[in-house]
Amino acid sequence: MKIIKGSDLGLGLKCNYMAIGSSAEEVEKKMFDHLEKEHKEVLDNMDEDDIKDLKYRISTRAGRSCGCGAI
Image 1 (cartoon, rainbow, N blue to C red):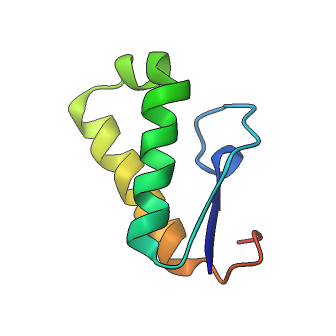
Image 2 (image 1 turned 180 degrees about the horizontal axis):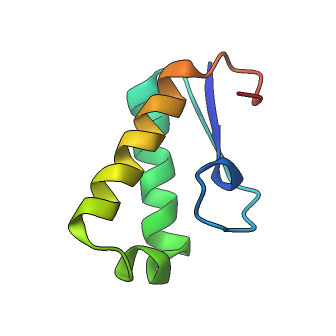
């Protein structure tokens, strides 16, 4: 089980969303889908490098997640 919390991404969002899945890839996709749907304005204000950095942070957190929600 892998978990990433939206509030842990360093975007200054007050977001209670948690992406939960059985693999890092599943959790990464769920989190980015959530960001595109619920926080599109944040993504729209990011340049290509910022989005690459965000994807890297999501990937890193998903890889480290033990499933407890605390990293």
